[in-house]
Image (cartoon, rainbow, N blue to C red; front, side, top):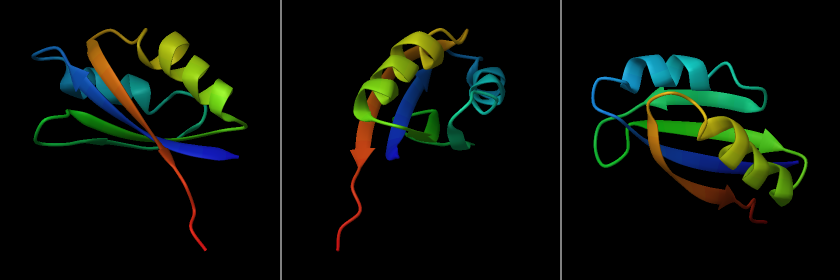
Length: 78
C-alpha cells in the first residue's frame, strides 16, 4: 500500500461540508480540518502511486468546495 497526505484548499464557507464529504471517501484514513495555508489534511492509502493520483483527480477534486490540492507521498524510512 502507498500512503499520501493530500493538502486541500477549500472555497470560502465550504471547509466543514467539504471535509465531511472527503472523510467518507474510500481509502481516506483521516480527514482533519486545519488552520493555515490549507483547510483540510487527508491521509490516504491506495495500492499504488497511480491509484493515489487517480483518487485525487477523480474523487477528491470532484467534491463540492474543493478548490486546489497538493499531494505528498509518504515514505517509511528504516
